[in-house]
Length: 361
Image (cartoon, rainbow, N blue to C red; front, side, top):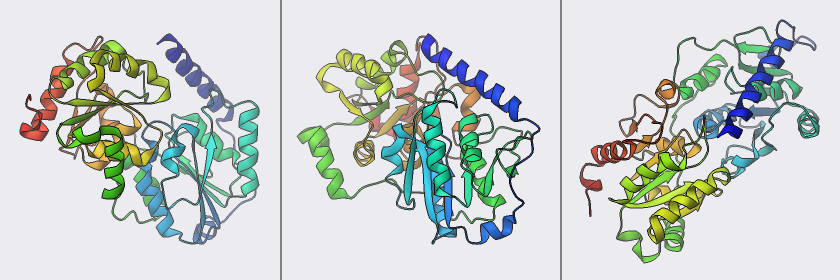
């Protein structure tokens, strides 16, 4: 845990230093006509919020940009760990990968900036939050003629700066503000994440076998996300409570593989482990679940989008920002130090949403 805290503290300190360095500077470069650039851009760079959930919350916005500019070449910059999600978006022409940069310095950053600048983008749209340094900094360094993004302070990362709301709001609503400012119609905000019944059947047969139609399944995502991940002790009570009622599918990413393996050892052969590095397989397994439990992770936001009964283990102060208020299939359980009582509350909320689906076998 200490390693995680130190890493995040280093990010925040360096971000404050960089922002202080640029504060008050003016945008360099020739004056441009915003209306002319937005009329018919040839190349558009989209920089999503690079944190967990950024691609799933942003995908409907990216599709709206494609609908507005059907002839433009649209590139998406994303974390290499989420390449498997980005490449499943048919409205994106090209995916540019960046590594998880602790600090915005070094050879890897220079190589990435060089690749961006060689593309000669007309427009760069940055969906990163005002308190996140890297998306805005990469937007600035991309060299795009028009750079659009969120920031309240006078910082030259953007030459079209959108002032975010002062009061907390759901992240998807913040992203929509960028589209409304640019007069881009969002249309239907729903975006289906599903695969064909034939493809799903083959995936379920491979991972679940003949038992897939006989058992009730609950997905539990132990992956890393926003904020410190839950410890094994915190997950232990949740997983045990779910396992008394259903079979658990434990989703995990590379960073949290040790926690997932310990939970697998605790539950024995009943539990299924699945590493989230393939989106069609992930979606197929999630669709087979009657409920889903996660922290503030990518799959939490995917589950909300898919309409699965979802319980989020999210700190109370983060709820307005990361949990939609108009989704009756979503509940929140406050995290406790050692997970005391979390398991019972999770199962109770899943049972409430699914009625009798979670009664004991």
